[in-house]
Image 1 (cartoon, helix red, strand yellow):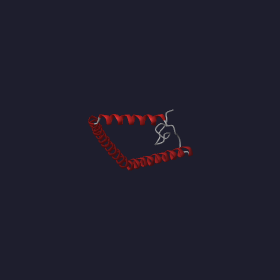
Image 2 (image 1 turned 135 degrees about the vertical axis):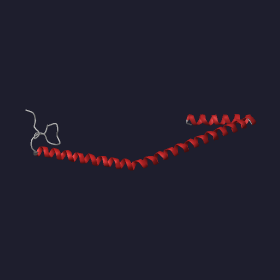
Image 3 (image 1 turned 135 degrees about the horizontal axis):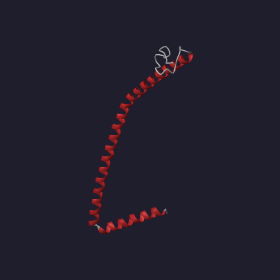
Image 4 (image 1 turned 90 degrees about the horizontal axis):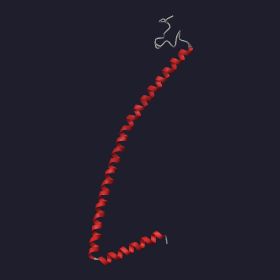
Length: 118
């Protein structure tokens, strides 16, 4: 016997819930609408949090970029300074080779002492 129109509820075209509105079907509808309200509230909350977090994320991104730029400049400056010092040392050793040899010996001796742990 095919289902009649009175068998289907308006919100259930599958025909799984039949008959009059019983306590079980009313509680199912109530639970469904509560779940829908909770889902809507959760979506709204997530949207608000995302909207509030976007400016903070942008500020963090700008801060990180500024930090990276600063480190890049500092490394470039240190490399330039290191190159200048190396050039100065080479020139000093060319002008005073014995002094350079003595300094190299002294640095090697101190490094060996520190490495040996005495």
